[in-house]
Image (cartoon, rainbow, N blue to C red; front, top):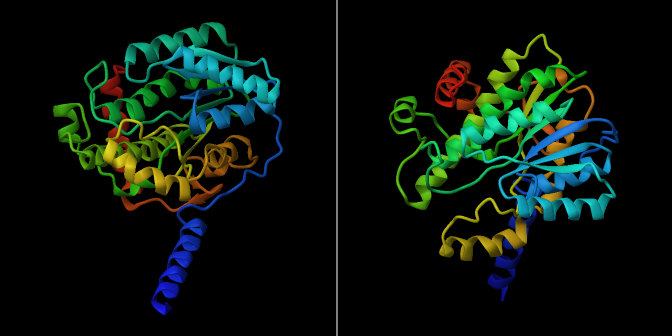
Amino acid sequence: MFALLSSAALLAALYVLLVETLFKKSRCRSEASMAGKTVIITGGNTGIGKATATELARRGARVILACRNQQRAEAAIRDIAKATGSSEVVYMQLDLGSLQSVRSFADAFLKTEPRLDVLINNAGLVADGRTKDGFGIEFGVNHLGHFLLTCLLLERLKDGSGGRVITLSSIAHRWGHIDFDSLLATKDLGSGHYSWQFFQAYCNSKLCNVLFTRELARRLQGTNVSCYSVHPGIVKTELSRHVSLWQKVFIEPVACLLFLDPEAGAQTTLHCVLQEGLESLSGSYFSSCNPQELGVRAKDDAVAYKLWEVSERLSGLC
């Protein structure tokens, strides 16, 4: 009996520790209005993106849901309108796995929308496969598509009074690395079809997100645009919808017990969108609504610079 009670106490203590550290909740405290401002959210039809869109619509923003699936985006728009009363949430087609789609989206946006105040690079996935341009899907969607999108929209962001770019990364960036020789040879940051291999590729893509934000901040010095990368927490979303059945059997019970819900996962993104006075922290990495220390590889400015140059070449910007 004593051993049973001791085990139960240990499990309870472990649960409390995890809830207060790895799965800690936070809350955006800003009460700022977004009336008159325009926000693009990639992947805004589900999960963290939808929760973010809902809150920004509630605050008066015009929200562009940049999504691949029109039917799901329109369903999300109905949900958001019902929750907020906003009629300023619209769908625009964007497939981050196609560089041509990214260019078409940017062209259509610039022709039809007079302003852009915030770009939220929210979409992401854990999966195996290739994009329409032949890139590894995690590198192509999680990094390269967002890199091109941001570059194409930067001038419109600069036209405003203080634009922001928020890119969702992950604590997983700490386990990432970038092999440029392999990237140029294979158009991918990983190889193999085992789940651990494309999880490693996911970590690599999340490192790209942080390095991209770091280099973007350097290039934006002297402008009125700032940028931030975000770890939203470990959130129960559709991110892992492509993983195998046995993994879902393992993940689902843990997710139900510990993972944050999308609303909680949206809080750090919302903080970086709404909180005044963050400009001096441009390029920083945020978690739990506070700037956090980066992993060692994420602070390598030479790698960040090289990633930018390689991304320009691979996306056709130069």
